[in-house]
Structures are given as structure tokens and as C-alpha cells.
Length: 111
Length: 112
Image 1 (cartoon, helix red, strand yellow):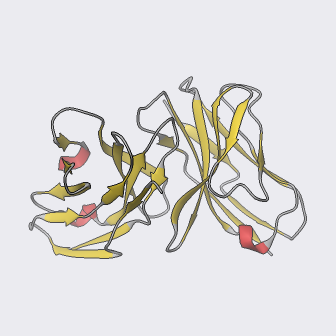
Image 2 (tube, helix red, strand yellow):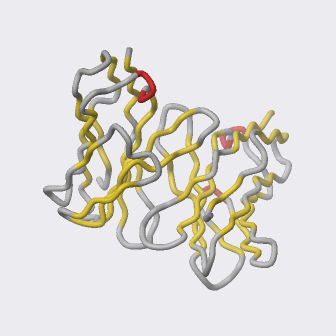
């Protein structure tokens, strides 16, 4: 089954404790992206990657890091999480200009 | 600035009635336009897209959208709403490259 998976689905952590949210897709898509969803703000892009070893900042990259060492994986790293990073995070992938496939989301709470 | 706007936070419609969820965009050049739906506790699902060609685009679950270049709009429509259509709907524009700019979303509530 074609899908984008994210782990964990839910995470409660404390300020400053480094965490990684994994994202993996099995569709051989070149493009992958991370979004955060906040009430009243819709989805905002954090980082994106057009292929292996090619990443770039989206609209709200501060406080986040990403890497793309393999085509299928695109982890999101929060080196020192803060409460304002409490949000619902989505990973997505696509081939060229076609529609993006979204993962199920990761709900992160930073205390 | 290149962006997309959804002017309504919520749309209420009775089951069986037609529905419209509005979207306008501001993009230089020829836009790629998308609609996505998000059901509670789920990720976004693709509904339909406009790249080029016929201005009326048909998508999943009986939805369609009309691209209007002069009004820079891409409204989502369905002739007869179902209670199960109740969800959060996002319009998105792809100004260039791969990035998507999303609207803030419109909550659709279909009442029996």
C-alpha cells in the first residue's frame, strides 16, 4: 500500500529535550516536506526536500532541522524544543508537480 | 506575495443542498491549484487539482472546482452535500517549484 508513515503519532516532551519525528514514504517520491498545523493558521511549511541531500527552508524553519540521506526518509529534528513548537505536524511527499500524499500526523506537546 | 485565501472560516449547509467553499489566490504566472480535505484526526487527502486545460475540474467524492482566471478564484463545489462531507477543507496554490501554499482552511458542516 502506498503510504507516508510518521512516528511517533503522539509525543509529550519537555523544553530543551532533543527529539526526532521520523517520516518515511514507499512511493519513490522525489519531493518531501514538513508542515505544522495550528488553529487559525492552516498549514505552514517548515522545510522541504527536492531529492536526496537537497533541502531548503519553508516559511517557518526556525527551531527545526531536517536531513535527507535516503530518498524514502525525511526526519524532522527539534534540537531544543520550546512550548511554541507545540503543534500538529504533517509530513508529505509527491512526484514532481502532482498532488502531495500526507502522513497521518504527529501531535507534539512541549511542556 | 503569493498566497491563497479562504474567506470563510465555516460553511454550513443542509444535506442534499449544493455547497460551495471559496478560494482566491494571488500568484504571478500560471498557478497550480489544489483542494485537500482533512477529516478529524486524519492527515490531508487530495481532492482535485487544476494545472491547465478545462476550467471545470472534477475530483474525488463528487467534488468539482472551477478555475476562474479573471476573478483569481478556485471555488470548490458539490451539487448535493452529504453529512459525511463534514470536514476541514484546504485550498492550496503551487506558485512554482514544489512548495505548496495553503489557505487557513474552511470547516464544512453538513446538517441532516
